[in-house]
Image (cartoon, rainbow, N blue to C red; front, side, top):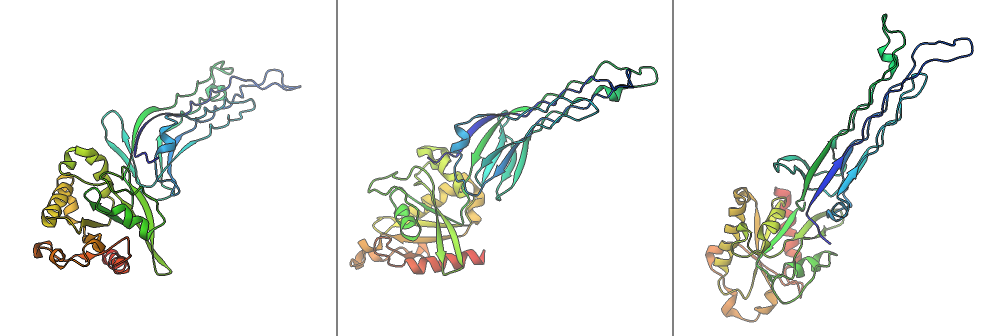
Length: 325
């Protein structure tokens, strides 16, 4: 199951208490204080794991608490620190403060970490409170409490290429044709309800990641048809493939609609490069009357994910565009 949003409560470990202790040996019946410091509480740390692509595991374990530090020991021994608790998240995870939705960190690369809650500092043992006027202090510091916070976690898919189009434009079929991804495919709108990722190989040594984004409809930038949940995943893509069904009666209007929805959601998307793809070309290959598209659309490439027509040319064009950018 693809999960791209969740809320978690994090509580770092408390610091261990300082020790009240006095040196006692065979020939030193009244030694001075020797209580050690308490250990530090464990931190709560988010860490990026490239093997993950969803927040599903995090969502089903919403409360995280790290271990507390151990109390100080005799002979000035410091207590053991509490173990840090690592929360593994996929690349592209944004950590936000739940109170004001402020972005705290954007975790992108594998191995990136963010200390969300720091463990409490251990208390000082009584050895630290010895003075000329108090040779036998009988008190020590308690450990400091750990931090507690609630975070919103939001995932924006990281992919080189994003497939954009109306519902049932052929995006899922294309992804399944050129990658090993297995999105749900059917002949009705909104078959895809979550992003799917696949790796496209280019020759023997290069590849790129392609994402199938659920279909966009008019009003998506205002949240219609779960549009906001879908559009956010497009922000990370380096290149967009705009797919338009070859049997579309007004492809120019469809192109304008898709671009307006993208730019209304995020104006910076207007600077993102894109390729226009006429999909399902096998359905019009023998119909000269519908082959011609309005010149205002500009350059486009014909493909058929079913027959494989134009697929190799499309992959080479994508690879060229990615290298240019």
